[in-house]
Amino acid sequence: MARFLRPLLRGTTYTRLLHLWVPMLIVSLWMYIMPTRPWVPALFLIPLGLIPAVRLGEGVQARLLLTPGEEGDSGISVAPSASWRDRFRTVVWLEVRMALGALALGGTAWLPILTYDLVSVAFGHVPTDNVVLRGVEAHWAYGLLAPLTLVLAFAVVVGLGALVTAAARRLLGPSAAERLATLEERTEQLLERNRIARELHDSIGHALTVAVVQAGAARAAGDPAFTDRALTAIEDTGRAALEDLERVLGVLRETGRPVHERPTLTEADRLLESARTSGAKVDAEVSGPLEKVPGPVSREGYRILQESLTNVLRHAGDVPVRVRIAVADGGLDLEVRNPLTAEIPGPGRGSGLRGIRERAALLGGRARTGPDRGDWQVRVELPLN
Picture: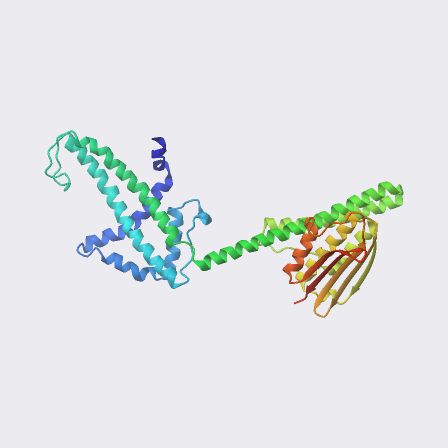
């Protein structure tokens, strides 16, 4: 019983009823002026629904009264009509709302009165103004029908509220163009989250790898001067990682706030020097104007180089590394090679190599990772336009 009566305790039940009553105010006024033509308001709704802004107003009102608290999950659009199909759906919605509103107003006004009159007949008083009970004989059995009319009133209040909500989701729901725009927005959000995840993996992973390698080398060397250089390298790498982390967290905290530019290939020397201080023997060859590489390509190229050097330090240690960065013929060619060791990260293993391939693919380029003529090779080719 308590579960049956639970809808009567929800505020949504009464906001939905209010939503059904609102258009009846205008209809009631019209019926007072011209009771012989009750169909005129329904006819007037046709040109009204063809106005694009009406769909916006109806959507806002439906979200506020039919689905309070649900907001973006309500399935109801709050945009003007963008096509004739949206306009026709709005016209149908206005007609449905008026029809259900008439039922709601009649049911909530007439059924309580009928309940009172049934109780009156049961106690011997027959009403003369009730067309249903006019002329009946007083009898106590009519009192047994009173609860049925209350149940019917309950069904009107709750049932019509649920029905008008379903109709709103159907007729005021997002159009195909709006659904496509929402899907594109969600796709952009997912891509941005993946990009941030790669940023954190590349930056923090590189810093931790350098710190671990430097600390291990300093402990094994037993040389105070080498230990001092190692601690300096750890400090510089950690500070750079903290700056990158702060930039990423700034994006997460305030998406509308402009953030500092991420590092580009013009700062590749910082990565190369960090790898050298970690024990790797880096031989770098840079050709072409790095400063003329477009920002997105240069930034992703920096991250690819960072992840490649991190993999060398993590899996191969202090081995000779050959780095080649070339800008020519409308493309960026980046290659990192080091001798193969016992621990070889196979293709697709780990998020680092996968991230390199994803970055290249998003920019319309290609990446090759794996053994090549006795070396481990990471080669990425990115177009500049």
